[in-house]
Length: 323
Ligand SMILES: [Zn+2]
Ligand SMILES: [Zn+2]
Image (cartoon, rainbow, N blue to C red):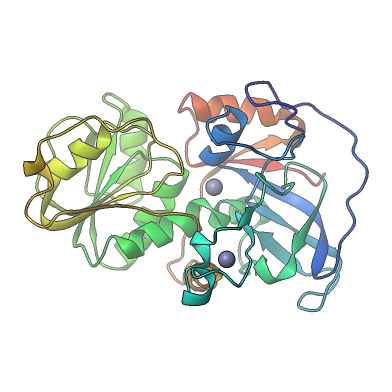
């Protein structure tokens, strides 16, 4: 499924099979998760994607042609971070997620909305046993970047999650496993999402713009809505952190300094490092994280994106690629 131009639907196309270059593996895709970032790419909210582009950066598949790290037949995951330079000041200080020349899967590199994909094997992960392909796919970004956001929110006991989609439905499970209390904030009246959150261990779920039941020690904002930033700061106790976990957000309205005062921290989380991936892939089966997915055939990628845009997906949307 190919994006020719932002703002237009993906097109079903027969492409020439990709060939693995040096250091790459050729992968037969079994499943590919649909991420909100894919929507931002398709809708033209992220600048200068490769065009035409095969989107998708939560790829689970089997190696067809190996490099050195993986053999033919191995199950691997391909995440958003597809390549880094290894030389810039970020790469040299353990912050490859901020690499100046990083390339991202399904953005600057063709991704997993396809039957075949190539990837730099250094950036692929083994997929933990015990997960079907469809259930494993959301671990690759919703899980990974959600986990990074959780880590950077500090050791908060009372954690607020704003927007209860693919990422939050994984993060709530990890947070509960770590002994935290979780409060889920959704669109007003979205009772289905609120019930879903409570079912996964949130002790409270309610409207994001209404009052919180008690102070939070940290909040993670997954929804791309800037007005949630002052709302989350207002709900967070002194010294607490508000993490913006998305790659794109509408403008943040101005707010009184009082909301930030008291050593509250407001920060974003960008991308992932390979270290995050290894840590999270080790942790997920121990929690154990159970993902809830809504599966679509590859050719219905536009439908999957439309449902995600409308906020209608429960858990994570995943494209089923292998027959
Ligand atoms: Zn770099
Ligand atoms: Zn993503």
